[in-house]
Image (cartoon, rainbow, N blue to C red):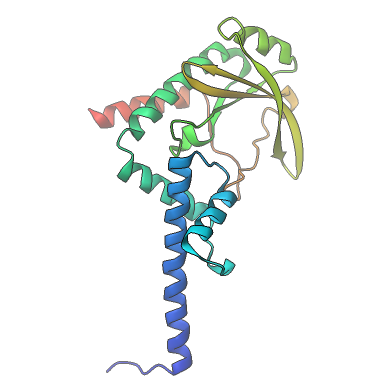
Length: 216
């Protein structure tokens, strides 16, 4: 025998299902915007998705984590060259990290996480108390290099760190320089409520081997 539901309970169940469908639709639209339009700000992607779908009920907005999963799904389903582009970006990152091996380089961001597209920046963290030394190493192969500042959250406080921005092997690279005192402080992710995912040279080499073995 089916359990009888009061009209109020039934209405709540319908509302929850509608909210779930709306969240999923917004996550999928935001993922499409991120994957095809080069938008990296998840809040901006949510706003665009809301405008296109016509949602004004902010309680139904998907989380950043839901959008990230939707991005992975969209890329695997619709962007047939995604894996090739990602492999190329990771190999480029590996080459740069080898040049900077004495500065404890780490790959981070969408190229590591697998959500990168062809316009994504390859983000690398290094540690040195002399930014000029890192610049000197890079300028052996890079002619046009800019020094910017990037805001990162280390622990409970936000700080600005020097970041070297340049193009190498057709990809944009951003090398953020931590001081030696800061080298073990992992910044907070803007997408997830936890520390950024990072991997060192050995970890990236292992990741590339695993991907190659899977293809074979």
